[in-house]
Image (cartoon, rainbow, N blue to C red; front, side):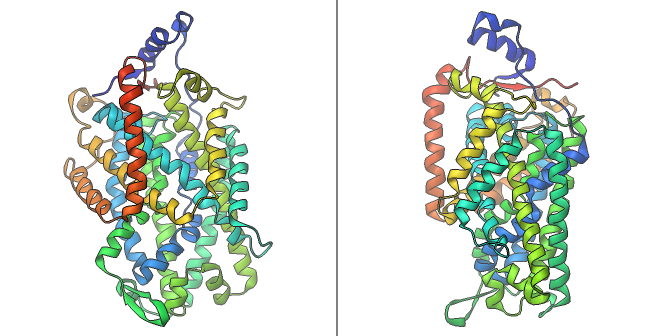
Length: 471
């Protein structure tokens, strides 16, 4: 068990570790200002189903061909078990720290620190991965450099992230409607121009070199599950927003499960339609959805869909910057860094947002737009899988001691659900490319050294997880 503090306990720790003058101060808390509708809009926008469909899924088409829909469907089923874990832990430990607060509280401080590092990798890498797709979908208007355009989107999202959260909920809600419309148009056109039957979804074929058709192996599908898990990964945003959700004991679970269900439909239905509607296997494997849409309709419809996707990507960037800044804010409140850094990340702006933390995630995100995209995809897939694995371990331990009696949403089929999830995720990790495992493993090793050399020797004053009081 970790040294987890309530806000009152954290205040005592802060007084002891920092200065006598701080004894009367409580740790800063985020304002509870959004209900389940606003939370779901923000969370759905972070999943950003349309931009995921148009930016991430084409790469899956390239490697998995007609097996893409099946792989995403399997990943979505696995995500149900993950969502159950998040729902229970998010209502048990409602903190802006998200995964790391939950895992630290239930599985120990080192495990919590490692899941924090993995989540930080994910939240730093995913926004630029999505943002770099903007240039492709602005092509009907202007031909832009993907890296420069992605960096611009990240800076724009950072500025928006400095605003009030309620205002951002409305902005992202409007953009979300547009991206759902775009996904719906693609699904309708794909189904109405179907070239093959429903059996093609399990035919496991991909276009090989020189026009040959290759068979997609079961092992290739398993390796693709890491990216498939990433496709709907954003539903976890609900736990990051738990300090700002009204009645988190009820609304966190509702937001997590509703978001997963809605985003799965928005992503999977168009994927099925595209698979059935692509003129041939080479077109499907090429993954150029905009060209397929134009072929099914006309250039005007293709341009409309492309612009909706571009707006969806900007929308995703805004929400991800909001989410990621909350993670850094929570880590500073929990004293993960040297005190000058903690003080900076804890600063609030005039709109109530942690402005330094917002800049700290937005600006590096713009820089990452110039890193090789395949490397970003690979490290993200490994990090998401590892993070889910540690969350599942925490869920397995969630009913020990006094936590057994804490009022929280409880998952069905416990403990079988987290045990099965741990086994499946561990196997998926073993099937990932060695290069990406080494990159992620190196970062985790460095994080472990930071823990051993800096955090652990200062365990009385560093990495103390504070749990906010509920109204």
